[in-house]
Amino acid sequence: MSKSANPKKLNRVFIVDDHALVREALSGALLNEAGLEVCGQAADREEALEAIARVRPDLVLVDLRLRNSDGMEFFRDLLLAYPEILILVVSMQDEQVTAERVVRAGARGYVSKIEPPSKIMEAVHKVLEGGIYLSERAVSNFPASSSDPCAGLGIDDIHQLSSRERQVFEMVGLGRNLQQIAGAMSLDVSTVETYCARIRSKLGLVNGADLLQRAIQWTMNK
Image (cartoon, rainbow, N blue to C red; front, side, top):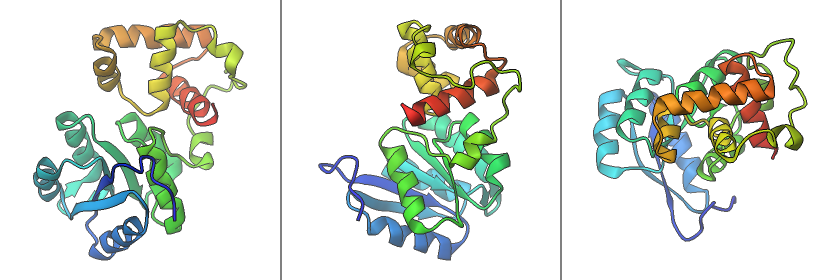
């Protein structure tokens, strides 16, 4: 049985999936984990938003295909209303295509439904501990420039960044979007965008996709 990230407090998890059998399977796996409790479940967007407003979970597990709604739109709405809630996507879509997309939209990770329960619980704990969960296969397929000179990004490269730039870099690696970073650092979004531009320049990164890939890789390996 896995240890909770915080043994003094039960982390509350809410499940959003349009298949009852999947919800029950995830619920059963979560209930077998120390430090976790299932505080609710829902099959669609409206049902989920109404329940989450009442129970305020720490983490929401969400499929991208919901009854009468789109999972991506749901969790974007959820993040706008409750930016403190963590989101882990548990879905059947191709992670090579989907993982980057959901992290860019604000989710804290992606794990496939075909993974064994132990792997899904590993992802749950990683996200609750403040990290971002992606398989090595998903990270390796993030778009990056073939001319990227930062393939071996390490400690020396990070030392080029100011303390504020490093804060932004780490938050990008944890899956935070611009609005969340701005809120956490009490900055305007435009200021965060400026920091991101400086980071790309200092680390020789071509675009936002390169920045996201390198930040995730560094955060996962630090």
